[in-house]
Length: 312
Image (cartoon, rainbow, N blue to C red; front, side, top):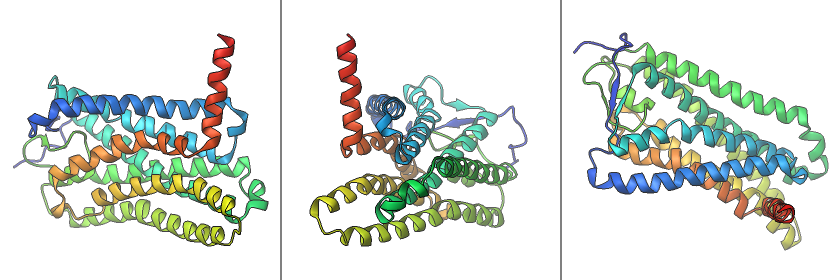
């Protein structure tokens, strides 16, 4: 079969969940609800962090970046998925597919690096409380955020470039609801061992290394918390870190499953459902996890709502 990735005129058909027709209506309803909650929750976090001076801290500075990433991440895939589920249009151009691949990889990579930065922030807050404001000064916070964005974009550029250089063969069907790397690798014409090995190393660096750093930082945090004598102090310390650790578990668990398994053993059927988890479920839960477990955010929300009622 001839390769076709040199022709930008030819696109792909995204199979989506058309092989599960009985699920399409149910998925459409639930995903529409989850997407609306994601937009509302993450926009609320960003707005509160800007409006309430008490939330002008490093933790909420990074949380704003996380919420913005989640908004972009879901918007890069979910609207197209909803159109796909409705059966209106299942096609995507080659250029659109490559652009989506780059955007999704970039946003996922940035989030992976940002979660490391947030773990460092919690480490400084719990293990170095007296020096916290000195360590996490605004310039360092800005530098860390920029490093996460630049690192994620560079990683995505490398992987997307390697993917575009590979000749693709066969039918123009992608058994997924968006253009994702493991599905693209399934379409490769020839032995992709060399290229796949390079891409695997890039993915491992952006996923395994940050996950190891986060686990290391939390080992230090647990040790420091156990030295706190008062139960109230321990509860507060675990509360501030528990939400972040839950976000980390949700994100890394699903992405490592998808991106760090050999192409030959990757199941497209299972992959679609796992992808639903990290493209829709996790971004929806992030604001809920942070707000429900955090008194500062709940206090800021009450304050803003109270001010709105008073002005009304």
